[in-house]
Image 1: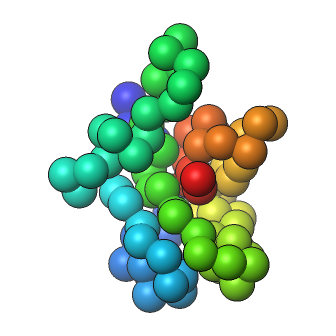
Image 2: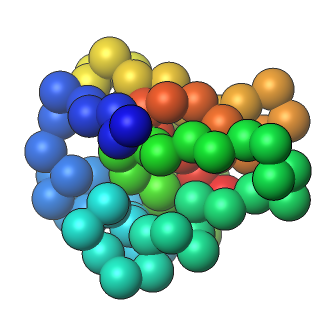
Length: 84
């Protein structure tokens, strides 16, 4: 099941320097994969942050969209927005 966020993914893409991958992008399945095969999350977006400003923008977007952010192990394990 793909989780959607209340924000527009293009807004996030414009706010960060690194790539933002969404469910419609070809690299989405590989980007969302984790080392733990028991975890199969489908975040609404994956932000590949390039620095602190990207992290701040991605977390601000996630918060404003009502989505999660980092998982407990700092991997894309929340249902909303993931960053790796």
